[in-house]
Amino acid sequence: MNIHEYQAKEILKAHGIAVQDGIVATTEDEAVDAAKLLHQERGTGLWVLKAQVHAGGRGKGGGIKLAKTFDEVKTVAGKLLGMTLITPQTGPEGKVVHKILVAEDVYYPGPTDKLEFYVSILLNRQTGRNVIVYSPEGGMDIEQVAATAPNRIFREEIDPGLGLLSFQTKRMVNNLGLSGNVAKEFVTFCEKLITAYTKSDATLIEINPLLKTSDEKIIAVDAKINIDDNALFRHPEIQVMRDLTEEDPAEIEAGKHNLNFIKLDGNVGCMVNGAGLAMATMDIIKLSGGEPANFLDVGGGANAATVEAGLKIILDDSNVKVVLINIFGGIVRCDRVATGVVEAYKKLGNIRVPVIVRLQGTNAEEGKAVIDNSGLKVYSAITLEEAAGLVTKCLAK
Ligand code: GDP
Ligand code: MN
Image 1 (cartoon, rainbow, N blue to C red):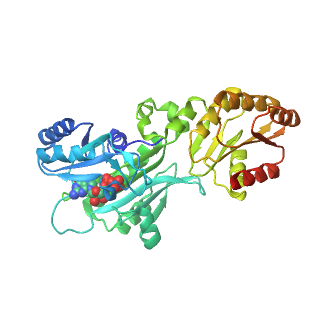
Image 2 (image 1 turned 90 degrees about the vertical axis):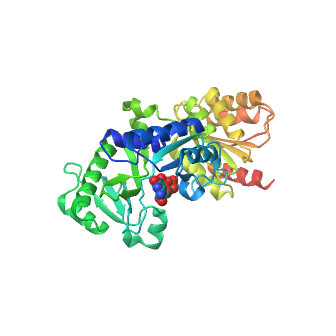
Image 3 (image 1 turned 60 degrees about the horizontal axis):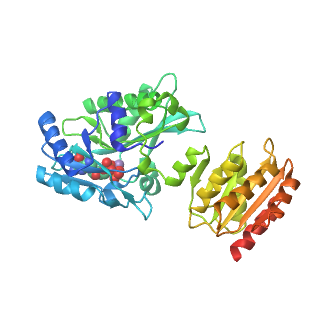
């Protein structure tokens, strides 16, 4: 699950990690109140207003703006709230800003040495250990650093029992050019970050930039945290952070029907039972000259209701030119699925694209007969090659 920057910072703060502090606002007036409160409580006199959307690169897209007076806070908040923010990560359609974070401006003026660093924690699947990735080139796209200056990105594997060892933390501060008190601050920061990562069942924590302040403090200016969906059941405090307005409506709808659905950009909708078969089906679609419009695994219990829900979600996508239903009848019988497809087809009515149904396994022949005798514009196939050929044929029309 994805969460907003302000929510990620709440998690970090709960673990005693220093962050650029702020208050979330949904209206201009709330933004001014937030700025006033920060002024009263922390003496903040310069503010930064940050669009809260589930995408990075906000600075580049114009979603991060400074304000020096309460009046400016109001006008800047007015501009950000409701805007469609387009960043390198939102896609061309952008994301509407519903919330902003009003935070203290933690940067200080004047010529200084390098201030911005990069730190993230994630799992290294090869070693089965968490790894801390860090770089002195913070504040910019880490992908760009990886492409242009890969030797400026460093890694330390984290021993699950011992944590970061002292030879590693020495190497880290050395690579970042930190010494003295701020070096100690940095090591403590990383240790707490590892605890936050483990305790919240995160799959990724990324701090970019991590800032060295004028008084030699280390603080997280930005924070991105992804949480492992399979561990959410033990984090009710994180579950409530879910923001449905940031998620794809089709994916939310699929979730309601227990369908495993991911929206993609292609033209061939697919519905499959089993994740492995779904991957294979997507390969077949590409080999047939199409592009998958989605990943959809209806799971083991494919029935008329799930087939109908899945078909409806697929057909709501105007990019879809052909639908390929690929079912392996193991526990579920093919004739039952075929009946489900025919029922769903009739019920949805007015289906504008060809539907190809490939059934294999238990009662495959009976299933094919159900499709062929239905009188509907549904093509049936038994082998994968047949199905692929039908996809190519339908796309060429
Ligand atoms: P992102 O673009 O979505 O990654 O958002 P960030 O929170 O990382 O902010 C982007 C950039 O805005 C940072 O790299 C900074 O250069 C700038 N920025 C963020 N907070 C402040 C601040 O408090 N003061 C100033 N002057 N700049 C800031
Ligand atoms: Mn950032």
